[in-house]
Length: 339
Image (cartoon, rainbow, N blue to C red; front, side, top):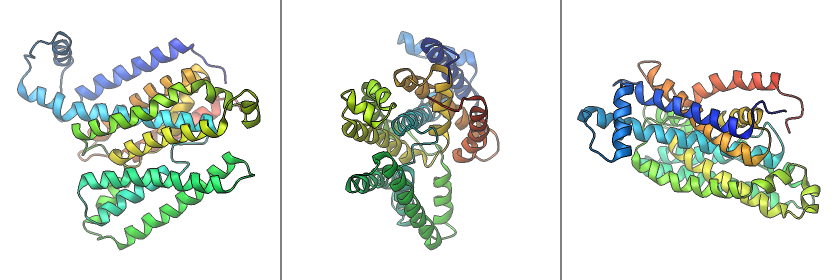
């Protein structure tokens, strides 16, 4: 796949897309905010002067719409970065952040928390621990089955554990109260940012940065590992440690954001392909481009989710409707060998 833009061009395009998505998200809603009002608010932030906007407008920007917009950017960026890391690590363009069962584990933890009528914060905690625990089980299975292709074993173990966790979710849905618990479970599984607040953002931000920094530092090792296990070892890369570090970082990011957003699919699968089409497969260029495009993509999707109809549309529904045609187009326009 030959990139159509250079590294700088791809990142600038992603930044422009993100800026446009941010302006649209701030402006559109039940309480519209005009572009001049946004400009005055940004100017007050830049200069440190008190804003002359009405209190109602400031409340919408800073307390209601602002935290949700930043959270949407954070969730989209994390899922896209994790997807790019997984695809590069496993050398498979069909890999997404939930390939090792992290989404299924987080979903089972959240569903169990809802079934037990736990507080919202406890539900988020169980989702986070469930995602990490699922990947820990998958990696433990792969570590015990030595002498085989480690990547193949990881993927197969992830599929098996994900299916098993999915059956657990189905069992809880059968046992749940059909009038109170089941609707809450279904809505969470479809993904939404309607309940996020500033505390959620402050909780998740350090975890996502903790996962993103190692991926950025390991970019050249991931480039080497794209040649294969034997070639990477011959060039001095400790493939076992790199694989463990990348999986841990990508899983931490995915589990953290899924815990507050629910299961949001397609971003980690589609966005890295789009970024790769623009800047090429080099992970040093791919990671920032995919991160920016992922943030912009989910920000636009979330804006559509809260403005298209009288009731909010789940994020998972819209990402599937938008992501599937884009992915088909990418398959049609890309060469057979994606790297």
